[in-house]
Length: 586
Picture 1 (cartoon, helix red, strand yellow):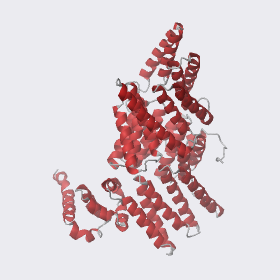
Picture 2: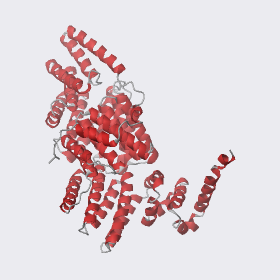
Picture 3: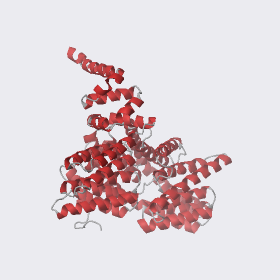
Picture 4: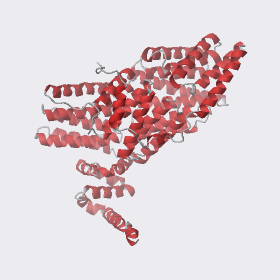
């Protein structure tokens, strides 16, 4: 008993010693740098806790000091706290470190190969930290410097390093929406892969194909993304880093979701969540990554309530790790904003959704240029929310102001999407559809019709006649014809088409069916077909009973706390479901 009571004493003595060193920081600054990395980090963390950010910034801006701090890998989440606090304070430590590393690489260009190899390895660690922290532009600079060093030696080791560098470079370019440069990075990686193959060497392609899948997914090239996710899954082998396995599973799951392969998506993302929690812990950013993708899956299978809960958990983790004005926090706010908007759409309670949408925009505009593509989706979500608030507003002047604000946000999002992806893209089509809905609220019916038709045409050509996205736009056009243009025959035809797609993809209890059913009830009332009114009242009543029984699970994470399958079994199960013998995509 006495021993247990005394367990706290060594920790307290240690903390007292750390505090004493910090109290005499000015005199002991040089001596601190000679301490073991874990102790040195604890001294710096105490500076952070005491709010002495200028002194901490002075230390972290020195490359040698930060290199040592990075070796305290078990304190990485605490390092993120310190780093983010410095960035919020105005200390541009990320760019200072990236520039310092770039200069160092220039200095050692003529040095021996082992000196360059050491620098490359450190660059991977530094760039990896900056990437994990969301400072993609600075991470990109570090990886470009590493790549430059790799090109100075035309030999096998440096070809392997160049491939690894390209994968890391592709990741940060994807994260920063630099998709054109990402495509160039893929081509360069393939060149080095070919060099290795010609000399009898083989590099594992799982990480590269996973990032290529992410690139294609971001560009809405869903068929290609799906094909490459299959190739990435084929590359998962025993001994591959868990982080790579988790990321490939995540990307493959998202590709399956947009291809409406929901059973495959569920198996993949649940296993990714399980692996991340088991390996990294429930407070790690990688776990939050998997939760965001799990939320994406849940939202797309119409389990909206659970998606909100999962997105909230992911946001909580990211705020606890990063806090402050961080891009990872912003994306989690945006995802939660949209799921909350969908969840409470029929209630008209949008305060929480609006808070998260505005928080996302505030963070992104603080960090990135005002024309950055990441703003397109955040502005779109805020515009959708403002439109609904305006519709429910009883003050005409306020309603007009909110609708105009929504209009400005939608136009800005559309321009950003067209600049990045062009006219013929799913993302662009979504923005046209959103404008169509808004114009209907603004009573600009011809403009609304034009936008909806444009959205439908693009989506049909890219996704096919029976995709979920097509059904959404078809339903919106039906609503316009029914409620505002009195084109009842066209509206009926479109409602029935939207219902057929929704039931085929999601079943009889799909949430979107409510609006189509209510639209048909109104339509049949308008044309005096009361037999059909009675019929669809009964259908709507049955739908309500189905919804009450559906998704009754209390906690969506209960399913993934234990995994019944090993990773190899999950991979093989997925691959068996594909067409055997299909080669890699062109």
